[in-house]
Amino acid sequence: MSAPAGEVAVRVRGLRKAFGDKVVLDGIDLEIRRGEFFALLGPSGTGKTTLLRVLAGLERPDSGTVLTSARRTTVYQEPRLVQSRRVLANVTLGLPRSARDAGRRALAEVGLAGHERAWPATLSGGEAQRAALARALVRDPQVLLLDEPFAALDALTRLQTQDLVAELCARHRPAVVLVTHDVDEALRLADRVVVLRDGAFASDQTIDLPRPRDRDDPAAVDLRRSLLSDLGVTPVPALTPRTEEY
Amino acid sequence: MTLEKVPPAPPDGTVAKDAAPEETGAADLRTPAWIGTRRRHPLTSLAVRASVPALLVAVWWYGSANGRISPDVLAGPGAVLGAFEELVGTGQLADYLLASGRRALLGVLAGAGLGLLLGIAAGLSALGEELIDPTLQMKRAVPFLALVPLFISWFGVGETFKIVLIAVATVAPMYAYTYLGVRGVDRKVVEAARGFGLRGARLAAQVVVPSALPSILMALRISLSVSLTGLIAAEQIGATEGIGYLVTLAQQYYRNDYMVLCIVIYALLGLAIDLAIRGVERLAMPWQRQVRAR
Image (cartoon, rainbow over all chains, first blue to last red):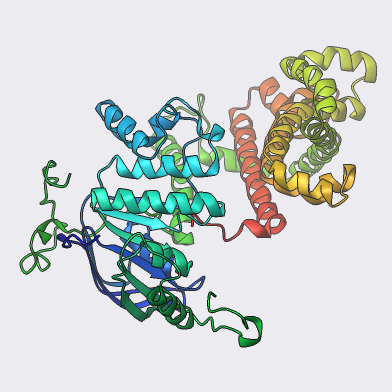
């Protein structure tokens, strides 16, 4: 994504959100432009998903300003397809009938051409997640929210789906917010990686490695190590005697 | 891709003015529309719950007080309260409730207990479903009131007849909802539990019934309501006490205040059943207390 970044699509100022006594987001400032792929890393329970849910309008901030572009869609960890509707009807959920052609195109883009009339329950995990991706794409989002969309996929499908998402985002250029706790995933996809800890950004790194990215690139190895240490994971020397790969 | 669409019509008050100027094309930023679910204050919820019944009582009261509702059509709250005090004073009401309560309890225990067992058996095993389901679907279509003459010829008009009638009336709803609930239990969890050596009664008690509990409690609600209908039918014949008998009395002597009192008692029993089951739900399903969409 070397093309210049577009207009601002997400702007957050002084966002604060607490559940009871627990402050999960404490004065977050954030700006994401169209075409920018933003990854939010953090251990479980740090408020990554809460931030995403605030952007999606599912959670209300206690204070602060949250502004996003109007066309905004979410892909969740699970496909969340409506079991009683066929794949195409799921993709065009909430859209007029005239959107069916766009729905077919979106399905073709994610490699599900020919599955329009299939029932969601007959799809494999990867296919269902691609259908969920098509459901987001068909809305031509200015902001695409991804809540650990690869977490439930098997390792091979995950790599393929990640490449698909990278390609689709490069083509359609939404502002992307990816919530994940997989450092490699963030390094593979994102232009900017932020580690969320104790309600604030513990680190904020711009990744300008060439694409497609090589996970063994020395720069990537350094970044991985630094992100892991920001996440509180330090290598145990006795267990990694031979290589630097982990 | 980005240029072919006209940006959605902006001004509906949510467009943030302060975010507009400095950046290019940032003018259409807006606060995300709230699509989450609100958490309601328990007191608000309680007030809303109480409002419709309270409104009905108020209309009844007002209509009776200014003569819009004739006492021949519907006795006023005062008259009904008088009838209530009369029955409480003679101790009849307590006796009636106790007698009916005992019949209903034994009937529901037997009927709903049987329905529960059959529902679990049919829900868990294909053989059980094949053996039980057709018969119970047929039985369900037979109105239990149609069995009254037959049961009287078998059991006479004594207590046995009354309890059996209520039991028979409550088997079918309990069975149907339990079956539904058991079918809805996560097959994968059942499979795993079987793998860990749980079979039969232990599997049902430890895994299946707890998961199906929401449906089972709904079934219990319905069974208890059905038992009230059963009481009216059962206590019409060969009874000298009971709330069903009270309905018969009201009808025989054409006492409108008693008729309305019976309705009020049934309504209050309905409320009591609902509250009791809600209480059981809270106590019996601690794992459901803090579930939210996440």
